[in-house]
Length: 118
Image (cartoon, rainbow, N blue to C red; front, side, top):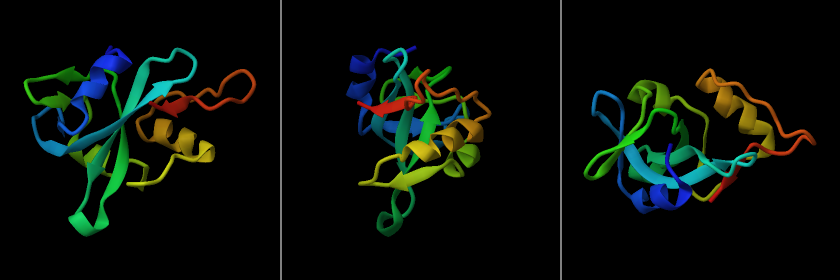
């Protein structure tokens, strides 16, 4: 797994799927609030006039010379829950991000959010 300080250096680099197809550009890192470890990244996708940020898990991600390679196919990522390029992920939509990738979602013991942007 990546440390938050390391993955931030990849902001602005390409994000590709396991087959090497470009998905988009890495925008930001979201950490798991229970561990403070990077859990998801947002990737800029879409046409220049209709850009949005999609969420992609970092599980099994690797880095190459100028890209971040994720374990999910491009078509799956492009259908992931998204936010506007200047938006924030509402707490109520967090479970949908996890569900899209068939990941378990468990809020904090006091109902806290699981993801925080770093």
